Length: 103
Image 1 (cartoon, rainbow, N blue to C red):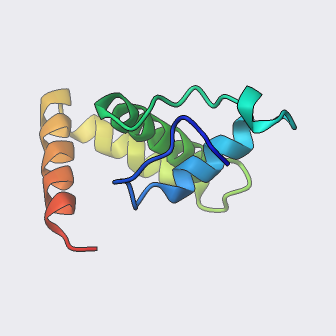
Image 2: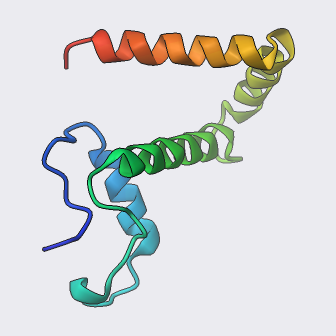
Image 3: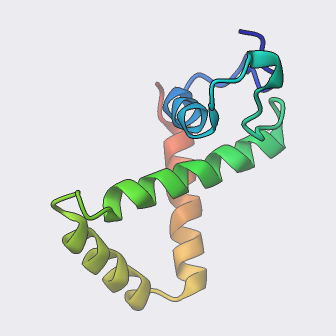
């Protein structure tokens, strides 16, 4: 398939792409198919981050997840424990730590 949002440098978001493809594909030929994903760029990175957050939130909090109640309780506790600036700093630190790991 020749899709506009093809990547050459992203080797970690295959699952996010697959989930977005399943969400958007309605049987149309590939030349008419759009997932509203931008070409490989900083904009695509931002969109993939948003999609990753959306899909993870749905999976962790869905009623069919037997741990959803506990997940929601822990998330509420976390957001009630830290102020928004501390949460932002924790997220940035986690991203930096992730980026330093070798895959």
